[in-house]
Image (cartoon, rainbow, N blue to C red; front, side, top):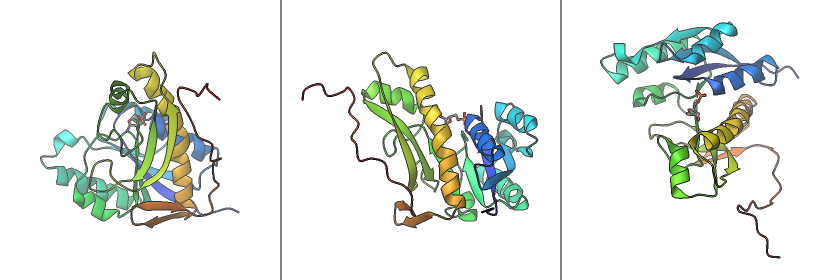
Length: 222
Ligand code: GRF
């Protein structure tokens, strides 16, 4: 069934590997979504090169040109509304947004975080997980709201942490899962299957994983 595609506005600041995953899934027609506009606050973001290669409209809003955060947000809202965006996707976007922005897109903003929220909110979370000595980490896609990294969780992926892992190795292992779960979260949204009840997001008629437990390091006693 050829579903109507929702229009995405993707916010980036850096490499744009999550943007690339969304582009790839969209180009392979695996997403009922298409990218209407990409906005970067960083004129040098490699994500902009990805837009050029895929003929995706992009705007650069250098946050340093805006004396007030709210002014920056208002400009972003204007561009996103002009592009008819249905869902805002923060993909490696490193600016804190103001309440004005969240009010403009209530429960229509997603973010991806490279840890299992509510554990390890904030920055450098892969190193924080290593320093804490956790045996599992992972990534979270959530609806973004005024608190940082506090919105209702949509989907999470878990990865083991191994001896000898450093920040780079763990970040790469997590990033691989980010590139899987973000397009999935967008597709659930596009299909209208996300129901928010309080803090809980229910995915209507989604499959269920085996209730197998994951143990790291492995249990060897029987
Ligand atoms: C990713 O780990 C993402 O979770 C975090 O920024 C990192 C880089 O993202 N928000 P990308 O490669 O720019 O999409």
